[in-house]
Length: 478
Image (tube, rainbow, N blue to C red; front, side, top):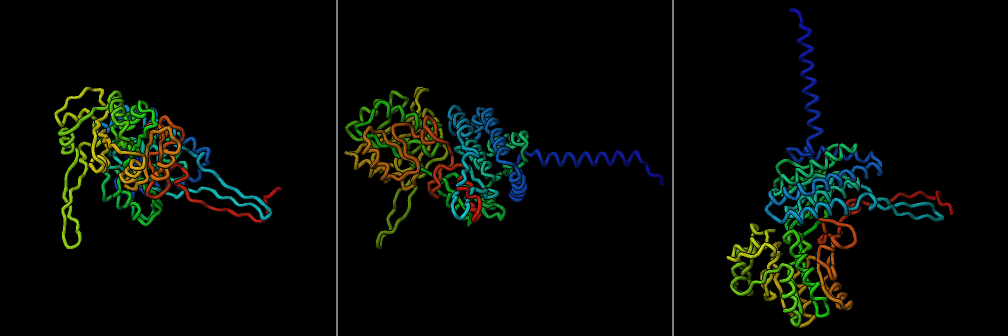
């Protein structure tokens, strides 16, 4: 039978076209894969390419990441609020811009050197390789932008494990960042994730042999999971930041700052003010001033009604000697996390003006609003007799998270006493808590604040390991 050369040519052309299409799809999938194995393999391959690039080229990729994050700050904020139902667009835009502009790049990697009679010794910061990064629903895009820049600056690639309730938003920002990197001449898949994140997928990532380091940003359970992975782990856990106001403070300014901080993105950031501890002699003036800046004061039965709405009561049994006692405890109702203050008030029958930003109420020191990290614009106020009682209570309700604390005072000794006692990673004086991550304050930003594992405000250098290079009897020119 005669061979039809034109048919063969046509079939060959079709096969080549399909192969090219598949190759194109593989390189332009935006870093999103079906399984952790695929995502990790792609990140491992990309990291080998990244290591061949110069520091200068790496910085070009970071510049492209910053630019695309700023260009899409509004889109990503809108997506995050719509998908998660948490926070507000205005503040999420600011947080995206903050992550894009104030996350350190390669300048954070500083070489140390010793030169003398015996030669030259260098200590340089080297990448871990492939990092597994668990990101929260509260700050989905900000954390990915922030960690993405810092981890790539350090020479790593990343397999992200986003929170399922912010899946689409997280995938979108990963796509945008990868596209910007490729356009800037970088490798595909420096940032990867799977299309359908689950707890099973996160567990698989934690155990994967080709993941060299784990960075977990989230609640206590997530941090414990990361720290039990057997790998180098950075854990950025929960906080319950107390604010202390003493009688030397500028009360008007303190009230303004506290409401601004506690209402920022509807109190979602772990650094946000969660409870106020004030000397009784200034409490009335502080509350009056807070109301001027968007606080809505509730009391009595309204407080109890709000407890029933935003908290779920549960009973636990505790052994005491030969008897078992039942103890009440509370869990935050996740349906109300990050909601607007006016929405929360509507649930207890109060129609508040649109300019209300935060709900305030006076409570006892052991009230669940004080003890639980609510992550919504509800701010309990506790009166105390003196500064000693204020500091003791603040240390207690911070729960040893060592995350963030705030004080409003013009007395340096008082500020110092509180800072030494509370031992938090971030301590903010006379400003909203968000000044601690660079909003209106000096210094770089991060959305991964590692209190539990001690790295503090993470940056590129946090994602490196130190390597020492020793050259004996040479290169000393003294």
